[in-house]
Image (cartoon, rainbow over all chains, first blue to last red):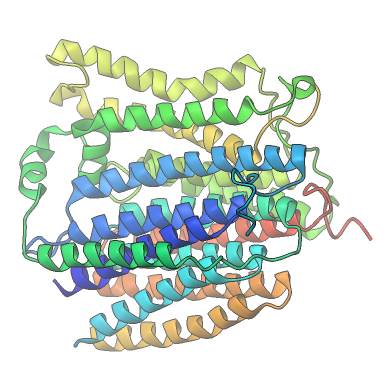
Length: 105
Length: 306
Length: 93
């Protein structure tokens, strides 16, 4: 059970850290990286909870779903990166324009 | 506390340090470099959790492909200014709440539970694969895997759709300039054959030991990218019919075996007598399609006129 | 024996901490990537030790995979450092 606790709590901290990075950065690439932190934190949390069997083996069903998740989040990352790069090519800016003109941070 | 626990705790502290540096660091490039390190450490964490299949996927995709994708993007989009995360007290409070809630859930769930292990064990003899993770991926929850292959294809169509009118249908990425007798050129000729063997081995071994179509396909994708970056081969034009057939072959074969499953009673039901050769065939074709899709996702949109 | 292997893995993790410092501090991009490569090497060593502890199939394959992909990441870095991301630093003086 120690492992479930150690890695599960790390996963929870990673999700929160990634979420904070996602809302506090304006640069699109930093937001994409933060999104990946949220994803991997979720996988770690899920994987830690999959390791609760009394004989110490890891549940294969969550493992398979995590592998699927890793591949899908890579596809999302690649698409987001391509969109961000295109935006950068066209506007020269690495971030989205402000919606609210008063909010200049 | 045992030595194993000490190892786990130090590993988790390193993971958290890397993640904090990824978010809090000023330099965009440094953040991406740390993200590669983070992927590596996470790979070790998966081994500690007894999930070697996941470790293979995380190592190949998280530390390998995502790293190269982000390195290229960071070099293009880095304005040299550096960014600090803005301080947002409200968001900080919300994140602390999320961490607290999830942490509480983990603590309250940390009791022995067998989960779905008995069910998988019971059905493994008829699944056609001795590796339980592969059995879940390609048989018990084959639906997920089919949809995942479709998601990869859709993402690639999305990336291609971002190309300007004049380069549509052309080759992805730019023409690579490489000194033939240099380190890069030598790498590009020396490593791909070794890597290709490793990739095929991972697909082949996947039915009985950790490995499988996704892990093996990712290695083949990395090897192809290496050969492309070293100027040994050119990516095919996106309008090429052969390329499109290759991209579609994996999901198509998987779907066809799923429909053939009606013979055994239901969609995606494998007759135990044929399950093993069917799964192996699907995995081999799927691995090739995945390799091509992943590599093209990393190269990005077409940039050269046809 | 397991105790010794864990102790060795802990020592390597400690060296990873030192490399992590280099990745965090820089100052140049090459410093950061070399630090990351060194962590990759340390990671391979940890995995080889863990393969003896866990006696689980595939851990050695994973170490092999990481060793291969470290070269891939290095090539990706070298490529990204040329002006348009397609050149060869050795070929352009």
